[in-house]
Image 1 (cartoon, helix red, strand yellow):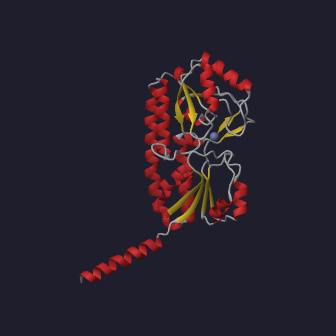
Image 2 (cartoon, helix red, strand yellow):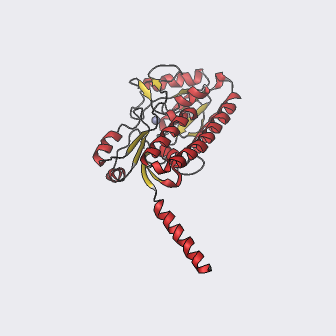
Image 3 (cartoon, rainbow, N blue to C red):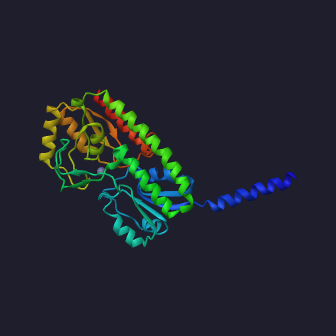
Length: 298
Ligand SMILES: [Zn+2]
């Protein structure tokens, strides 16, 4: 009796493992990989192409990426012109699965105008791709990921729906927390200097003015004129919060802070997760950024 029961348990477990071979998914960069894992759970195996602390703007795909994508059932990208290299990669790899554009239906912010006082020294106009810094827009990312995974794996539809709903609640809770944190800082004090123009969506959501020597991409170098103008602005506006980024060269910000006489307040996570806690997940990244900015502004 006992032996028969044990046998049947083992048989069921083996059957379950076989049936649940995770679906191979490729995400263009680390933040999307985390969001996709949150929605996909055990039914997916997610591999990011651009890893932690790496810059996706200037990424150059390698032969191993072609192989990974060729074997994937789903490819998740940000869109809004963020990953200029993905179309060619998808073509080379012969990818024939479901392509999820995470920003589909997200209201984009325009670049090249001066709504928030950015120093747009090198923009050619267009849209700002960094929409993940606004948690309300990330709710739309989660919806798109859920729909795409369900399309590629219809048997998992309910599972993805439940996980997306649970994760959305966490994202909304983080948004409410951030709003209460910023509410304690007078609006006139909410000015932050960073390496490149990655945080306009955070600024849009919580009324923070971000300044940076570079535009929305890390491709262009800042001109001496832009840097000189920023130094004047930092002094004049008494900007207290100056940050380096986890995936950008810190030297320009260090130079700026020296010349403007303001201390670097730490590091923000802009375009990539960190390799270790607390910013090794999207929610960890978001809370770390908000915490660092709020404490620098006080
Ligand atoms: Zn960026």
